[in-house]
Length: 413
Image (cartoon, rainbow, N blue to C red; front, top):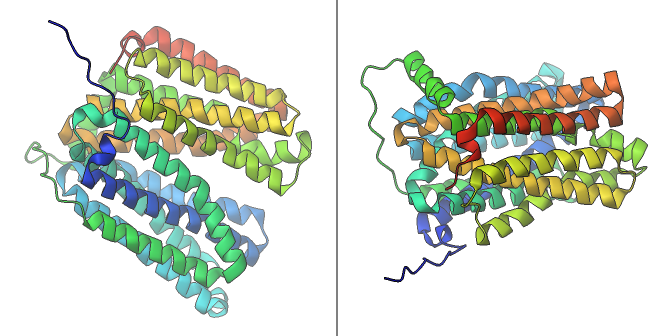
């Protein structure tokens, strides 16, 4: 009997109404939070004229995020995930309202408390970001069927990266032409639309879980599950160390000024290049998903990411540097889509929240620590040698992972 292979549909997950609502809501809220991040940064610097105050914004968000992330995973596995999402997005709305109110009576707020209220609101958004991510990742796995996990991960990635590029640009334009108050009002409107779109989805059954299990036991079970699963642990570790050693984003202002001799406009193109590359790759992956030789494709994509970073370090041409960063974003997105699909496929429904939380801790910590590592390495080795070292270490990590995680290497979807 002749076997007819089912034709791949790149838009399969988008044909599911609830996934379209979820994806649109996530896009709108990501757009809003990316706008808010730029507005807050510009506002803080205008008030303080101190570059260190910009670093405190990241710290104010990172501390509550890291403290809350694991607990958020536990809650996403025992409470209604849709309600958690709606609660945290409403929290985003309240934060935007508070920031807008500060602009209406800014002088009085500054005289009384300085910029502390702004940092407190940023801290609440860090709490909200930590809480919403595990619930989102667990909820979307209940919306789409298992066979569409790679496709849904691809479109999730596409939406996030487009919002990551468009959000700061839109925030800067509205801030520049219409002022800070209207910029925050725009954020409030976008978050409100996100709440309405999330409200259009339906509640999903809470997966069965052990009774009388304490939070510590629940978190311990999640950590043990990840540590014993070679495919999940290997993919998370691979991505974490690639970001930790291979990220050159923190050093882009120095490259722009001292190596490529370009101004803020050139820096803007350099910062946008990885996200643009990621969007291009997302569209490619929608048509050609990495379902065959998936483990090898994961390893190759991270290795190619490291090679792009090494070549970027030695480039002295602005156009070549933009191209290499765009390619690094393309390869990085391949690993992102594969990693997200791995988490969806290999995680039981009653542990999705905890595993997603562990993933957020891996990636969140590597971004923050990676920026510190880049600065420290540049101070010790010099700018170009430090980035070459980072890219080379990424290749070393790929080689070690391929050797110690054969199950991951041979994996296919």
